[in-house]
Image (cartoon, rainbow, N blue to C red; front, top):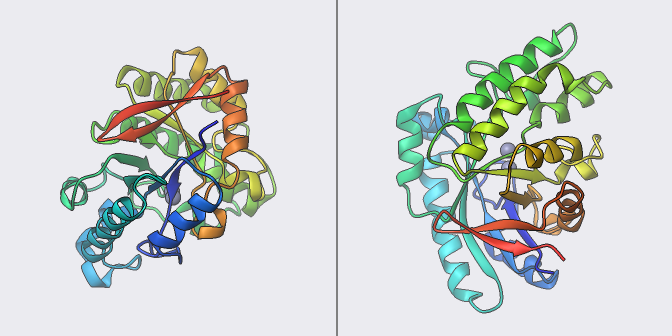
Length: 273
Ligand SMILES: [Zn+2]
Ligand SMILES: [Zn+2]
């Protein structure tokens, strides 16, 4: 079976350390068929330029695109290298988003929400005394808007805040109170022909599940979802491809017989055996 990792970060992301070349070599060593380089571009922060806490996206993303183009050429015939981007908060600042999408050509864009509008990244938040249900309601409401944004291919880590809420509180929030909101997100993705990502990073951290977990992937399928992408969210070459097989198992258990990779924003289906 072809193993494809559609979510990796190179040293052109502020929080990652391996070069695009290292990522591709790791992918080849592990027998991957395809890898997407999806460096971070946080739309609302682009305008800060060199003063941005996440680095200067005007330099980082063109560099990511150049490194990915070089790797595509170097490893042609050995590895399918997909030109990707992880676009954060695309609706928070339309000018930033337009700029992010014009840096170069992409095959594949992941859309993410790492922070609710005008709030910190969930990663940095302090959860003591916080109304978790209220916070998650705001998050899913924002994600619902992002799901309707036209210029992306797959919605990344649907349950992203759970990583940090669980770590911060030791308790797993009950998502059943948000099921209507999550259903609406799934329906929008389905209507607009967008994919849902199974992000496997959670398997190796506190949560021990994919983001989203099997019951939600199953629900997406039940509602008519047919496009799934699978990504490790690797921030170093040693994690490239790690857990993709487990992600495929989740897709299979949810009823999928294929998952998608992307070429020029068109899905190419990979059979699940
Ligand atoms: Zn992310
Ligand atoms: Zn990521």
